[in-house]
Image (cartoon, rainbow, N blue to C red; front, top):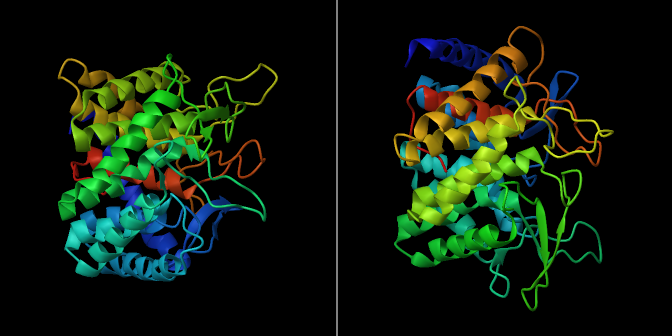
Length: 374
């Protein structure tokens, strides 16, 4: 580690000490957003269910703290009921079982975890719409709603579960499904300037593209920063698993857009393209996600290009630690000032568990842990 990255040692120490404290209250549950200093615990079917156990596995990998391992395992076991109940499952099975079962299997070789992850991969592959070459995002939220034509950029981070399943089983169908979805994203989500749509609606029968939607960004034509971050990391992971240059080039284009729109403190606003009269709160979670993608991207490009992405990832994580981290107060979250869903005015200045997870993953990578859970 270079001298200028000595802060990473301090940050990792602060993280491990705080997780040891907060895990005693959170336990084997599923935090989402922190309000008034305490994480709200969601039901296990909520899309963020994998991030807390994933964070525990990141820390356990380094410290070998058996208490954290036991909590992560218990979280994983609680997800069995969600998998068997089936009706609440959507495309975020990747987030949920990659950071629980795949992580457990990669770290400790647990065969029951492998079975769970392969079942999740099969269920995720079953959401693929062959007419439009997209993985359907959600089931209906309300009675009578039809969102069978909805795909969202977040799903790029669910694809690694499919890539992993192909490598683990030797069955190319999983990888083929992931690649076809990723190709659809290149065609329909990534704009020429590197900005990204959040939601695209297709006709589920014909597969034709109908429209782009604003989603959690300001408008269909804006540039939601967390969506940009999902794209950087997800496209880089698709290159990691396939070696196809088109994914690498797209990841670089999106990364350049993201980096060029960062503010002076290297942490992004909620949306990069807003009218002057619209608030632009920070989204620290978008910074943490992007940092992890940028650090992986730095390892995938040629040597001459690597420093651009490496330095950006390091600067984002350093700013999150020094300017956004909570290390001395009573706050359970690690990283302050996340924006979950600005259009719905929901959790607009809060620690978010996925921001905490990716912050810890990024630190772990800077500490030399290069094996991906993804």
